Length: 263
Ligand code: NAP
Image (cartoon, rainbow, N blue to C red):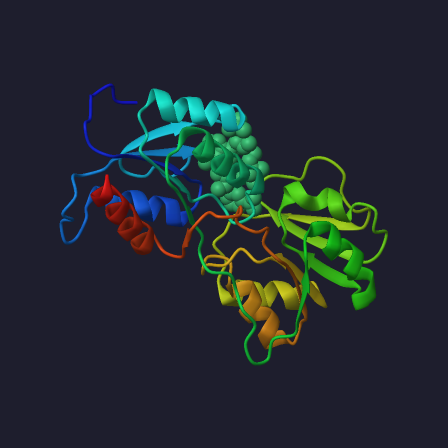
C-alpha cells in the first residue's frame, strides 16, 4: 500500500472477478482522458487464490472484519467511492459493502456482469438458490449429474443418495459431499470441445450451474444445448436494495467519473 498523499478521489474496488480487474485497468488508462482528476485505485481481494492475477494500482488482500472493519478501512484510507465488483454469488461481501457504504456515507456501485438467458434449443429449469436446486433435483429424474456450482456449495447436495454426481474443481472438495460422487481435478478454461467430450464420456443427463454469467464458463451451456442435456440454473442472490448496478467496467468507470465530477 502506497503512503503517498492523494488529494483526488479514491476508489476501493472489491474484486476477485474479471470485471473488477477490467475496471482497475480502465481507470489506470482512461481513454479518452476524463475531465475529472485521476482516481487513486485500490483493489481488494479476499485472498482465496494462491497466485492471483493482480490488477494495476494498489492491491490489498484479505478480509476487513465485517462491515464495521470495511467502514473503518474506508475512513482511514479516505476512500471516496466504493465499487462492489465481487462475484454475483459473493452474497456476504455485497451485504457488507452496502452496510459499510451506509455507515461511511460513500457512494456505492455494484458491478455485475449480466446473467445468462436461455436461447433456442435450451432446456433450463431455475432454482432460487442451492438448497432449492437440491430440492428440485430428484424431481428432474436425472441419473448422472454434472454439478458445477462450486466445491464450497456441495454440502447442499450431500443428503442426496441419488443420482450419481460429477464435480470438477482445482482443489479437492472439503466438507460434506453427496455419497455417489466422482471428483475430476482440473483447472479451466474449458473449450466447447472439452465440455462436449466430458458430457459424452460421462453420459451426463443433467447439468447444474449457478447463473454466474460471462463467457469464461459459458461453453458448458453450449455443450449441454448441443447434446440435448437439460440444465438446472441457480438464480443469483439479489443486489442489496437501493444499490445502483452497472453491467460492464466501462459503465462503472462512467458512473465513477460522473460522481467525481459532482464532488
Ligand atoms: P463471501 O461469502 O461473500 O464473503 C466472505 C468473506 O470473505 C467476507 O465477509 C469478507 O471478509 C471476505 N471477502 C470476500 N470478498 C472480499 C474482497 N474482495 N476483499 C476482501 N475481503 C473479501 O465471498 P465468497 O463467495 O467466499 O467469495 C470470495 C471471493 O471470491 C470474492 O472476492 C469473490 O469475488 C470471489 N469469487 C467468488 C465466487 C463465488 O461463486 N462465490 C466465484 C468466483 C470468485 P470480511 O467480512 O472479514 O471482510
